[in-house]
Figure 1 (spheres, rainbow, N blue to C red):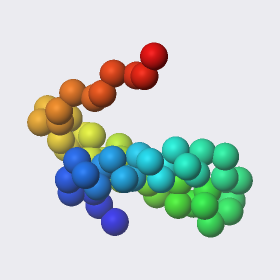
Figure 2 (figure 1 turned 90 degrees about the vertical axis):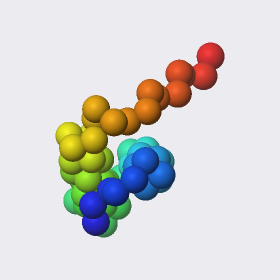
Figure 3 (figure 1 turned 30 degrees about the horizontal axis):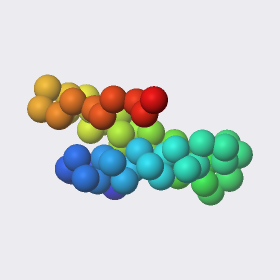
Figure 4 (figure 1 turned 120 degrees about the vertical axis):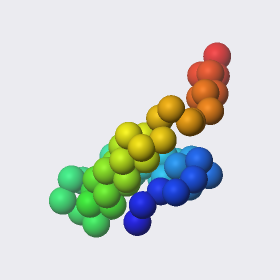
Length: 58
């Protein structure tokens, strides 16, 4: 499912991070790959209009 807003992007990144340790061939691993593709596609089309990222917590 394509990401169409920054809000959806934030949710997708959170879910992607949650699935970081999922086995590659599991359902969660496939979901992580789908999210990765969707996130990259969103960045490719919207990179010039995205707001700056939050700085890392110290």
